[in-house]
Length: 203
Length: 386
Image 1 (spheres, each protein chain N blue to C red):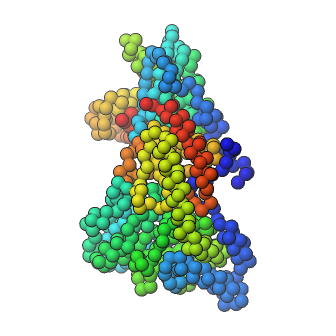
Image 2 (image 1 turned 90 degrees about the horizontal axis):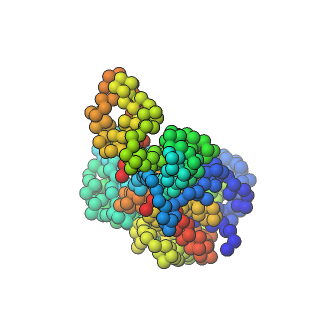
Image 3 (image 1 turned 180 degrees about the horizontal axis):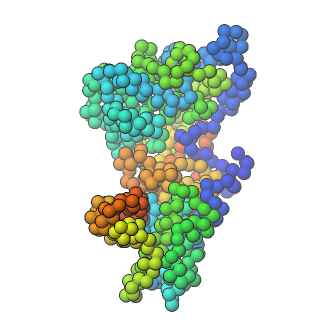
């Protein structure tokens, strides 16, 4: 039993470090004044994140987060927080889950959605900031990817419809966007995205 | 306090007893094929028959009713296969009744068979994980071939009324199976008294070796081999005898029978010490399962706002090994089906931790856990959305 089994951990050493010593957590006593705040996930799904940012001249100058979730969810939020403090809003908005995962030294496949949550949470905070500033969101279009080519439906459009609750089922989504009604090639990809967003935004 | 290593996952598996290790080590020289007629073969066969007698004594059945298998999963699959076969051959009794909280070696078998059109009902349980007899009665009828209900649950420890359920099954002419894997060495397991027809056990849950178990089959009840081949086990289970492991499970069975009372009391006192300590030191906790009819060494607790995998891994850093019903630890997005079926709120299921005690745990270890656990829960709650 005294062998080195403690050194062989479930996740990478970086994940372990961020899980054991999470950075920029929002301690209850701290009165953190934020300019934007976003929340994704749900307790029922087993992971939920709240991210608050301070913005100055379109740069994220500080960030605090709270996460309910597993080790990789905590580590993903912690890593994301380190990466984006000092980053411009546009770059931060474009931060991809893959970049977070890479910085963590990788995550097991079934944990990838943890890093997706981190990235969505950050975007939600930036969205909130821009709404509060009464500014249009100039970043959204750039990150949008067309999924249904026939009817020009983007991943961002699907995300927004799930997030707002307008599309509660795939049938709702089809009725609203007409995705997949022409060539039908995108159907499985849309279904996959829908499930993913449903997991992130269902409350 | 110095770093310790505390194993509280005995429902997952147990360490082998030193007596078992010694017996296996000795039996490793019994290389003869127990089916051979010569001296070496007879020597191995003799050791196997001795072991069979010890299992029979433990389960309260006859030695010729014990069939060695690779474990409880195989034993459970064998039983369902017997009735699948009977249904295939046109039996008028063509429905199986089981519960929603069985081990995966049954629930997955059920899924597999249902997909192929077999009629199987899974009876719900109450909020403590117990099968309500009145509810069960509504599922029984003249078309039921088999009723299969586990003796004690692996996750929450809830104990079922097997004797009463068996009576109900027999009253409609159905056969009765119970997976007694988790109950061995913890509560009396009585095949005759309960009048059960089939009973599954697994050695590694009671300080025996892995990869060996048994299916006890009452004489003159339906049987069909699951593994076909040689004539071992009277044609009930083919495959060359695993002599050392069979010897090992025999010794484990002997110890389980001898120590039942003292061990049961020991497990319950540690479990209660931890439960009281947790309730005293940590605010807002929920103890899952049935507190009256519970396997003595099992304690399943939910810590709202602290996710199970995180709790497990923080405890692991302190050398404390437990398990969780959280989705994150299972590789799926769904938390434990046993907890959900027992009416545990989905958020609480994500924050559930199972502590399962065994023969070698001590009070000092419980004190160590009570020292390390509260700050971990506090810390995780501190960084959780609130």
